[in-house]
Amino acid sequence: QVQLVESGGGLVQAGGSLRLSCAASGRTFSRYTMGWFRQAPGKEREFVARVRGSGVGTYYKDSVKGRFTISRDNAKNTVYLQMNSLNPEDTAVYYCAVDLSGGSGYFTSEYDYWGQGTQVTVSS
Image (cartoon, rainbow, N blue to C red; front, side, top):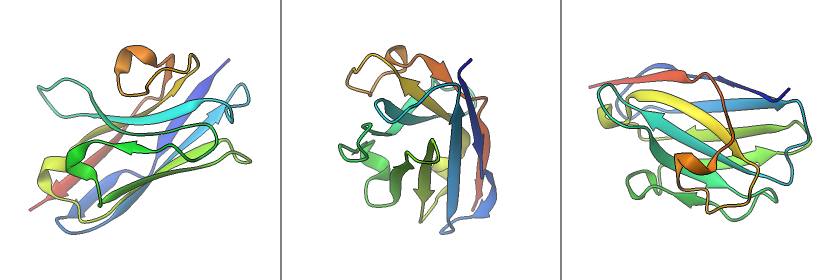
């Protein structure tokens, strides 16, 4: 059974940093695209970043480029999201997901399994 578990969320002041982790289990994920999404209250879930199975082939939402970095450690079946220079607009529940079908990795509909989410709150 596939399971994704996020951790690392919390409360941080504007300009601060957080590192999110997503531990995957149930199969080997090194072949698959992993993504991070977020959902703020009253808004739809949106794409943040994704990384191909090899660890290269990263892509980011425009508003996080230069501030967020997605990476993965396939030996640990874990994907990370390093978030720097956080601002209040980054406040949301952050979810990781795995795409088993090899799509673009930009859309929620392409992902097959999701974690439960971790809350990130950035105070001004």
